[in-house]
Image (cartoon, rainbow, N blue to C red; front, side):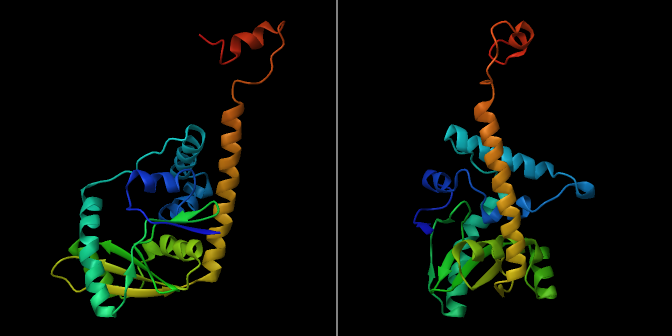
Length: 222
């Protein structure tokens, strides 16, 4: 069942809504593999982060830098320009949850569309304009958002002051969405296993006469 949380992004309510579940902005991490097809360290870190949120009930604030903060500030300009050009009413929302997955789209359009705003430095926006296709670095997030929100299309808008607004629409890529779904299911299975292991850690029964085991038991260590 789809749940829509009407709260501002990056607020305590927003962090609480997304706690403990993989979200579209990190689907590229969920799908990642390490060198030579091995385990991705970034993916493992994300697993442990979500496990910590589930077990402690405490959310972990996301990383932010100057470029990301600037992007948040520019989002409203991008929204207004897009709304005027496309004659579209963009509904702001905080978070969409659908089972054990979620997304934070920058807006919903009508009953089938979505809006995603990005700011890029001038040379990167010019690259988008010259290439004139959907930015591949945002494919996992945007296709994942379509999957989570059960929508049909998404317009990505890339903005920087004094440069043309880049707008590109993508429709559902069912084959790619299937690969996201497979990766997210595996990720959530691993996440549940980690949570279970941590909750059981230190609670393995030890016989009173097993002195070696008692010395090594976490509660007796030190």
